[in-house]
Image (cartoon, rainbow, N blue to C red; front, top):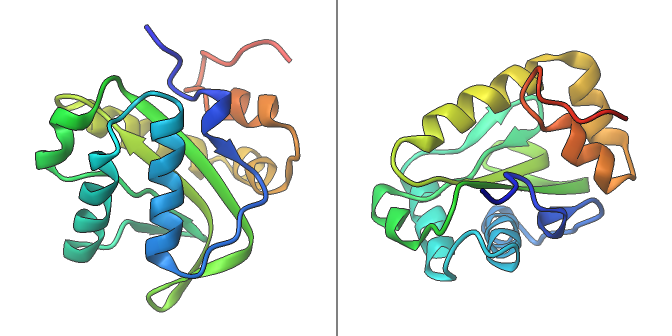
Length: 148
């Protein structure tokens, strides 16, 4: 089974012209990691037009629509940090975590991400670290972290 977060899907110093550009970058990171077909990125933008994927605390979790599931090769996560922030409606996003999942896998991924982001120490570390391996470790579900 491929890793959920491939190092190739991590960007720590990104800049975006706006919300749609940020979503495209999250989706392209999933494409580069081999998790999705390029068409999945369009379904991520479609999802955002129907309901915001902003979850609070400067974090958005863009993901595709049901129609995009056929474009998913394997469940995966991308992590794109925008140090200067990106306008997301009336909010500002610094962390953009893209997800792709086959079947109902997105529900599990969203739940696991919520638990990780609710941990203030892990959330702060995700905002501050310059180490891709640390991001990969921090985004492992509780109990599955690799040794430091």
